[in-house]
Picture 1 (cartoon, helix red, strand yellow):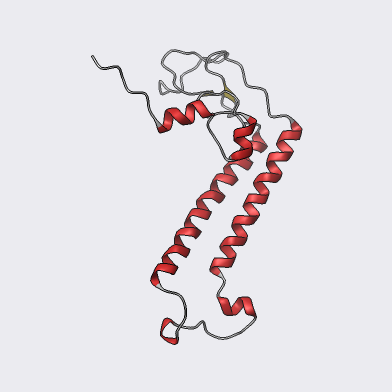
Picture 2 (picture 1 turned 90 degrees about the vertical axis):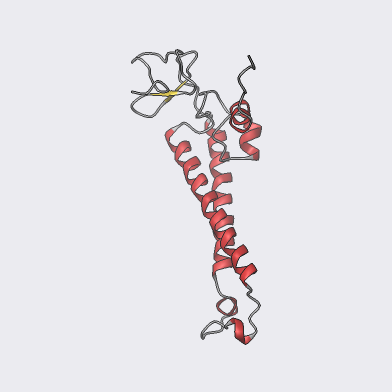
Length: 163
């Protein structure tokens, strides 16, 4: 077992750990106290589930809008117009549409992970330190997996002191 995820059967140890430990069932254990953080209150879970589903619906609608040809939106049958026929699609517009679809599919994956974490009771718990994620942070970014201090550590890693 790796040093990062070493633990005994009853409590998490703090020797050399830099993240939360997990039991075989996937329950996050706080590395400092050895206790499982309290689950998200049921009211908050309902609120965040609704927020995540709304974001998911919006992203799917946006992707459908991008991927549906203009003639199909207007109910006109027939082959799509080509660029030679004066269609407004240019390579730049197509590239932007593709990047938008790729970005939205990545966001959809993050939403699915957050919904899975809601179902298994680990939503709102930092996957790095095992502490709770602030409710305001989750309202701003419902797919957040890290508490703010850990997110800052990931963005701006601490530099070792100069000798």
